[in-house]
Amino acid sequence: MARPDPGPDPGAVVRPVARTPSGLFPAGPPHRPTYREPHPVTGGGVAAGGGAAAAWLLLFGLLGTDVASYAWWTVAAGLMAWLTALVLVRHGDRGVATGVAIVTAGGWSIAAAVLAVRWATSGDWPLW
Image (cartoon, rainbow, N blue to C red; front, top):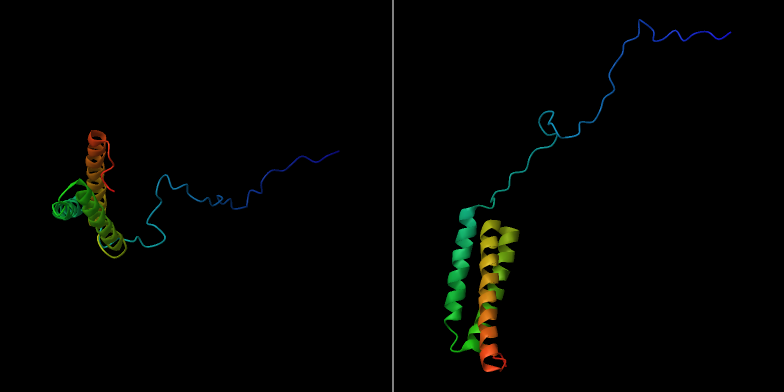
């Protein structure tokens, strides 16, 4: 005849099984230090970069005497601005770099629209 299971030992200490928290509810401070970047992206930095890039593109665009030279000056100024933005992303303020990149892309879009309108009205590609 089989003996019945006596169950847990009444003198044994029952310990809960340790579980890894899911992270949904923080269970205290992080185990590693939190990194705080020295130059966080701010609206003021983005606006400053955008304003500087707009002035830069405007100055170079004013050097053009016709649509073709305006477009080439805008492309050259935009390339220099994006190189500056790349340096700023790596070694400077990422907010300013973001503003420079956004406004440069907008300036190139305006130059492309001017070229498209000239091409559509004249039927001749204005760049060469």
